[in-house]
Length: 454
Image (cartoon, rainbow, N blue to C red; front, side):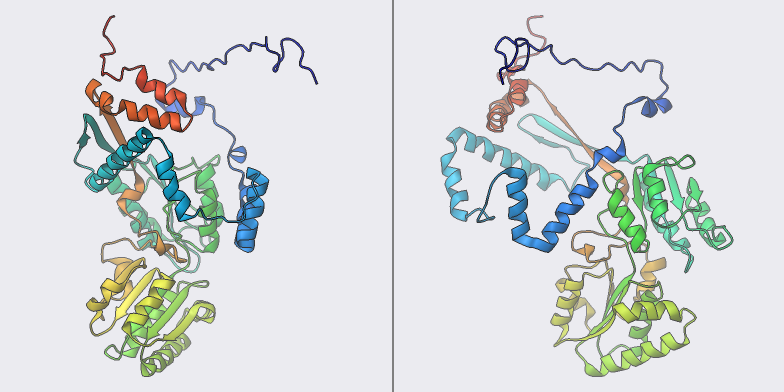
């Protein structure tokens, strides 16, 4: 079809330049700026269902699904997904020497900076470019404390204290209401002690949604922390990106107890039971290389369950997640624990300290016969909001830093820009981004003063 004159495709077609939409917010008070700014509707921001469908395909179909999706979205039929090592090595020799030098220059600077990064108090300076750190707390943090089966004032403290230390302005606590519609006084007292700003009697996934999206009553937060059942944990996963969610999946409680003959069976048994009493969907394992220990602890657990007022919760957890695992020795026991990556790992052995270097994946480790996990749940000091569901492979206990952002500030003078300008331009052009290259060239690769000649 021929294009008519004055339409796209016609050689004489000229389109008016795109202009910037103006927003005049003069006179708008600081508190009203957020409401005056345009925001995309949340439902159109994330293709949630489409992405879930793709992930489900990959989870069930593996390589075949990846190839099918690559053909669909990228228009390429692939036989091999992995790039051969030889092809990678050849690419290094195929690019222009000056581009390779620019990449190596960038690599060296990035490496130097990140080696310096653990010391955010000190500035990083190199080749006339200075990088500083600003630590800034989130403005409004959402805290979740479970309820229903038990009261958790300790969780209120664990969630609120690091937020306060980080400098968060407003803390918002959601707790499920009891049968009478009220929040337990122990929980409210903890909120008062910790200086929580607002408390809402909302629980479950609906509490996570209310904090993430906001309601007529509850203004949305920037970050949500705190443990909960699988519905709460899944809700947090789904709102991640709309609000900040620390990486760990803080779901049903877990413990792996590694024990030998030197620890009374009753001690190991009660430590298994204490985590199981949090309720269903949890995990409570004994790992030992002694058949006698396995038998004795199993008997002790059975006796504790039979006499416990929380017998129903214990049976629900142990029925699906309670195990006594026999292994060849201490090394194999820790290997099992590393695969499980439990929320709590107890080392109740004669030489527990010797096993510690082998631990690679755990939310928290409780070392020795006199350090039960309950110590960490209440008064040891570190946070008891820990990663579960194997997320200890990549996540950690809740920390002050989870409530802060790190903003780096880059400054450079004419000489600093001149030292890297040529390589910046080369890399930008290699990526097909001409305006990036122009941004350094306009400033003068020779370090010219922007005010010169004016």
